[in-house]
Image (cartoon, rainbow, N blue to C red; front, side, top):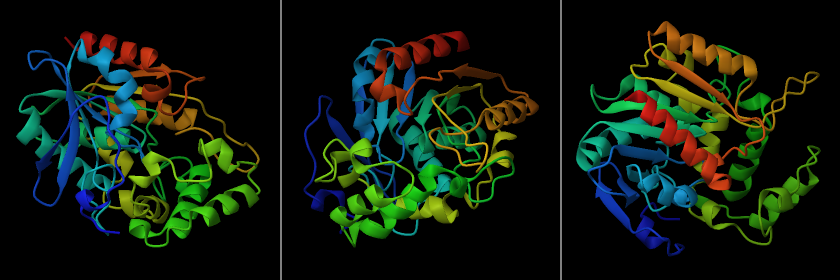
Length: 313
C-alpha cells in the first residue's frame, strides 16, 4: 500500500470540498466551512476517523465559526508515514497547519486521540495559536502504555482491538485479511461481535479503508505517547480546557475499562493537573453519549462547542 493518498483510489465524495496543504513531511487534507470573518475552529478526528466524521456537525458549527476539519497523517487523504505516528508528530503537523492555513488564533476540538492532540496543542503550540481546547472523550492516560495514573491501553478493551486490527490488516494494509479480522473478533471471549463494530462486516467500512492500521500498533505498543507523557503535558497547558466525558464502564474485578475513554478518577486527575498549571478547566458529563458525539449526536455536540467558545469571550 502506497503512502501517497492519491494512489489509493478508495475515496468517496462528501458535502464539503476538500483541500490539501503541503506541510513539509506530509500533505494534510482538510475541509473548510463557514465565513472567514467568524472565529476559527479546528476539528481533529478520532483514531480511524477522517475529517468527514464531523460532517454531521459542520453545517451548524459553520453558522458560528470558520471551521477547518483535518485528516491527521495516516488517515483520510493525508500522507501515510510509516514509523512516524506519535502525538508529538500529530501536534506539530497542526502547528504548521495553524500557521499556513488558519493564520490566526483558533479553538481546537479533538475527539479521542484527536483530543489528546488538542491537549498537546494547548501545552506546546506556538504562543497565540490556540485560544482554548475541547477534549471530546479524550483517552488521557488510557492511551498510554504505562500511564502515571490509572489503567493504560492494555487494560482497555480497545487495546485488544488495536492489536487485532494491526495483526490482520498490517501496517499500511500490508496484510489486508479482512475476513480473518472479522472471524477473530467474533471468536473473542469479550462478547463483542463484528456486527457491533461495523455496519456490514463483509467488507471494511469507508473510514477503515482510509486508515493506516499502523496507528493501532503505535498505540498498543506505547510508541504513540512515548515522548509525550500525559501527566507532564497536562501540567504545561496554557489555555482553557473543556473535557467532555461520555459513556464508560469499569470492570471492578478485572480493572478493564470498556466502553469508555477514561475512568472517572482519571477525568478528575486531568482537572487537577490543568488547574495546577493555572488554567481554567471545565468538565461536562455526558454518560449516555457515544464516543464520537460529534458524529452520532451532532446537535448536542454543536451546542457544547458553541456555548463553551462563547464563554471564552
